[in-house]
Structure formats: C-alpha cells, structure tokens
Amino acid sequence: MTRNTRIRESGLSGPQRDSLRVGATVDVIQKEDQRSGRRTRGVVDDILTRSVSHPHGIKVRLKGGIIGRVAAVFPDPENDGNG
Image 1 (cartoon, one colour):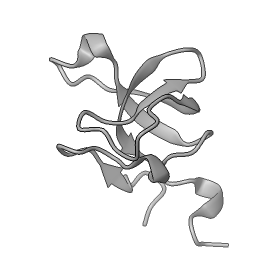
Image 2 (tube, helix red, strand yellow):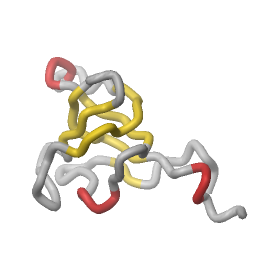
Image 3 (cartoon, one colour):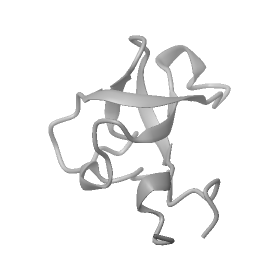
Image 4 (cartoon, one colour):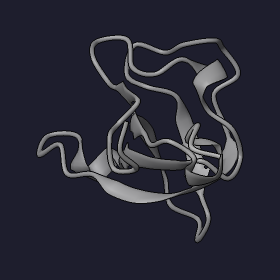
C-alpha cells in the first residue's frame, strides 16, 4: 500500500469512529461544501461524534478549527508496515 492510498472511503455509512484517532490525516466535507462534495484535508484535533458511526460521516475538528464530516482516512506513514 502506498502512502497516498486511502484506507477508508466514505460510502453511505462513512468511516467508523474506531478507524479515527487524534493526529490522523483525513479529508472532511464541511457543511457549506455538502452539495459540491469539496473536500478539505487536515489533521484531526478532536473527534466530535460520540457514536460508533454516523450515516453522513464522523464529525471532527481539524487543527486550525475547521469542522467537517470525515470522507476519507489516510494511512499513518509511521505505521505503514515497512519498518
């Protein structure tokens, strides 16, 4: 698996909460971008959704304060299995 390969892609149910952690690199869709599907990439600062899953994606706050629902989670380069 390459470093740029997505490990989880959102579908109707989106990524599960247990696939996220603070410090993970993710793509989120902000509320104002729901119609266009425009994604914003960032690092998770806080996981806001308490349930295991959410039909529109787990809501997170990125470093810098952006809030959105997770559309994709990217692998951690420090734990990519090559070391």
